[in-house]
Length: 334
Image (cartoon, one colour):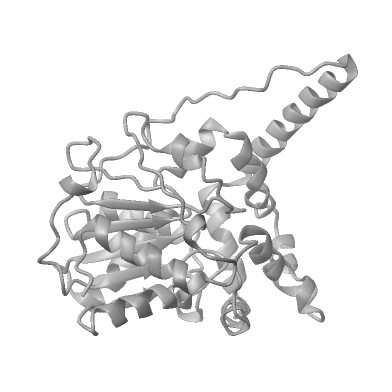
């Protein structure tokens, strides 16, 4: 799914996007999500470096809390706003306080990148690319799309103390084929043929003292125990609805949840925006993008899976996404 918004909050097509032809040397910043590390963007970054003949810089940032030096003992430092502020401090340190850049975020990184684009540095970001997670996820969860709520079980599970940390890393430690980390990767990206070296680098990142707890605290501080209660309540209602239908021997009308709050988190972006979602994503349902993006905007949809050429062609898919993104966002592509 690709959405384009201009500063007047109206739909734009690629012919009306701002011309970034003078941005040839602007760096591209990558922000990762969970469970991942900064090397997750290595394929896209290498493609950018290769196609630009080294003229464009790529910066792969580690999410605050994913290494020993950035773990904060203070409560509230894992909220989206707080992490985005930490990213901006790091960006200013590396590039300067008046620098402009492109930002690409995946999963939690998409939420952090969106926050940077909406609040912290809207005038400094040349383009925003979000992968897997739309910009106003909170509004989408309020609408309770059935498919996404089913896939959000782990968000509720992560509200429990200690158990998620044990399950992800320590459970199956003697048999790594059965631990929670590998299971999450397999269930969220069933067609992704990830290499073992990359997976082990993520395992090493999360196995550092305090890192796995810091990573899960991001779910706890942004969602809270109320999400667990809400999740259990909705699942109970859905279960009772199904049971009553079975007892009556008839099929009841589908449950409908309120869309209240759908628009309240919607925002206007002052830069071109590319949102990418996978049709078979086991974590964030692609239909959530239709729920969360403003109803006044008509998205342009394209299927990437049809061009993938098989489960093992992930590098080719990265190239297609990168090149298509460059074309749509008017980023010079060497």
